[in-house]
Structure formats: C-alpha cells, structure tokens
Image (cartoon, rainbow, N blue to C red; front, side):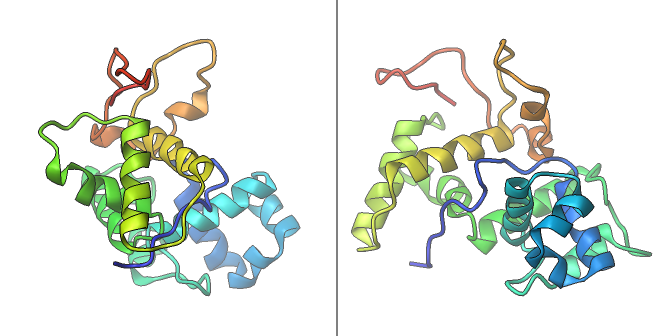
Length: 201
C-alpha cells in the first residue's frame, strides 16, 4: 500500500482562487516565499493557517513538488502564454484536477473514497462514520500507525465541503460555497440521516 497522508489542510477546503494565487505568487516571488510566513500572508492576502493550507492544496493537486517548485501542469493551466484556464472555468480542467488529487495521494481520503470505498458497496450512499471506519480498517489491515479519529473527522469534513453544496442555514457562510469542485456534482447531501444520526451523502 502507498503511504497514506492525512491532515495538512488546517481545516480549510480548497477555495476557488487559491491554486491560481499560490502558483502565481511562487512564480513571481520565488519558492523561498512560502518559508517566510509573514511575507506570504501579505502576498496571498490570507491568514497564516490559510497560507499553510494553500501549500497543502498545491501539493495535493500535484501543482508543486516538495521543494515548492512549480510543475509543468501548473504552467500550462495558470501561467503566462500557456494560461489555459487560470480561473478554472473549463469543466475539463476540474476533471483533470480531480484525477490529480486522487493520483498524487497527498490527501489520501480522496483516493480512498473515490477509488476504494465503494468496491464492496451495493449503493453509492455514505456517511462520516462509514468512511472513517473504512479508513481505520485500511490502516489496521496494512499495519500502519493509527490516525486519530479527530484527524479523520477533520479530513472527512474538508473532503465533503470540497464537493457537496451545503444546505443553507444560519451557520452557512459564503466560503462554504467557494470550492471549484462543486460544479462537478460528484457528491450531494441528502435530506435524511442514517441510524447513527449521521448526515448521508
């Protein structure tokens, strides 16, 4: 089994403009910028935790490497004369990013859910408890060090926010609707809960 990676997103799902912002800042300011939090905060226009989250998502989508160097796919989508789809308006770009986030396995919950979770299921519904139990079993079976349930719950919430349009309520904020993957309609929140009291998707 490939190494599984969890957390790193600081509880923030990827926002619509983060990938473009991150790639362009690295291109304009150099890879050293991301090791200078105060400068990165100013250049990216977000808080410290969001800077770390942007780094996480750039790696998760395979847009930069571990040295924060911009990879070819980033140049083609976001930069200069290539600049195929910097604002992620083409659905094909979103499907490419969907493939990349599952393929890089940097945010492992994406690959685990889309590529493995449903293999022995008779329907496509799922809940937080089911996914967390599935991942915990995968870790046990592979004799991989246990990941805390809080970490897995946090990953699940970020994962769902990446895809499912939230039900509007007094607690819903505008940023909940600000994910590029919402347009793919891969996950929907259903109107009922299961026997455990979990929201069903």
